[in-house]
Amino acid sequence: MLQAGNYTLDLSPENAFQFEVSKKMMNNSQIIITVTATGVGKHEFKLRVNNLIINKKTQLTDLKQGIPVTVKWQCKISSLDEPWFAVVVPDKDLINKKEVMGIE
View 1 (cartoon, rainbow, N blue to C red):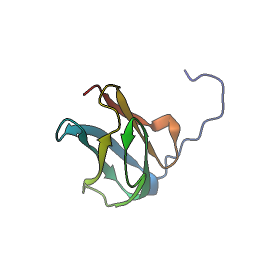
View 2: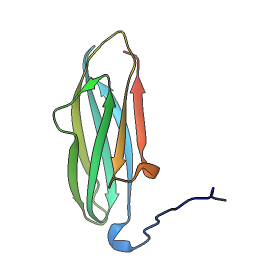
View 3: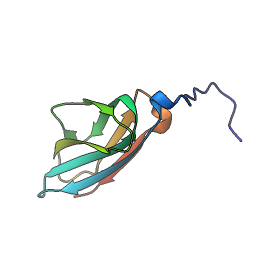
View 4: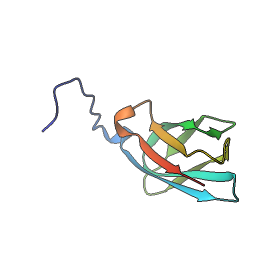
């Protein structure tokens, strides 16, 4: 059951994809955030952050059926005394966002 509202659901095979998000601490202030995506078509992943410094917010992929693609962001924690989080938004679709966070 969905709540009332407007929803966009694209079931076309040329846009089908899935993705997972993970994080890896490199040292006490460096983090690598990784997206692993599978499916087909061109897709955009945008990283929205709090308490992290990143050089590039958006990365593009061109997925081929059966071949996983990995994109990575190298991040630096701005303040080690505060928690951080990152939100990966696929194709400007906030409904399907995924998050990672930490207190390092």
